Every structure is written in C-alpha cells, then in structure tokens.
Amino acid sequence: MSLSSERFRWVCAVIRNFSDHAANERTFLSWVRTAIALMAFGFVVERFDIFLRLVPAAARTAHGLRFGPAMGLALMASGLTVLVLASVRFRRMSREIDDDREQDRALMGLDLALAIVVSTVGCALFGYVVLTTR
Image 1 (cartoon, helix red, strand yellow):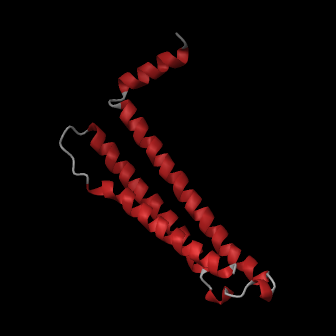
Image 2: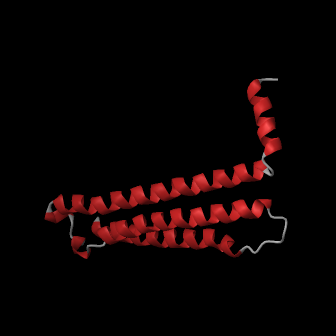
C-alpha cells in the first residue's frame, strides 16, 4: 500500500462523513467556476458593445438600443449572486451533513431559480445580438 492511500484512509477515518463533505466542496467549487464564467462573460458582453460602436454605421443599423452594457452588467451581477448563494448553500450543507435530524430543503429550489434567471438573461442577450447584426 502506498503512503497516499494510507493517508487517505486515515483522513476518512478522522473526518466524519468525509465523502459527503468532499462532494459538497466539489459542488461548491463548480458553482464558483460558474460564477466566474458568468462574470467574465458579462465583461465580454459589456465590452462587445464598445466594439459595435467602432463598426461602420452601415453594419450597425439597430445598434441604437444600448442593450449590451445593461446585459453585461446583469450577467456580472448574476455571477456575484451565484457566488453568494453558493457560499450560503455550502455552509448550510456542511452543517446538515453531520446533523442526524430531518432537514428542510428550502434552498434546493435555488438551483432551478438561478438557472431560470441566467437563461432569461441569455435569451435577452441572444435577441439583442440578432437585432444588432441585421
């Protein structure tokens, strides 16, 4: 047996519900990556509007909408919201893993709500791009 596998077994024996805690941390890190991607995409969308202002007037017939910066900021704000809510969810799940009592799952619908918000922003952004590229 290698030293790393012995150490892993020791850690699993010392930390109660280690596999559940590890899964909770992986889920949290996935949410963090999603939040970073949303914020980065929001920044790109906001800066793309500057690019469209540099394009000749013939190529930007419907650009008078000024929707890009608002959508970029909305995506950045949704990324920050995802980050805060993921932190709340992580802390709550960490406590619930070791608690033997029945738990209330009020935050479980949070994932669906965030998906709906992000998809709504994405649909609005798609419509904006379609209108500006005609």
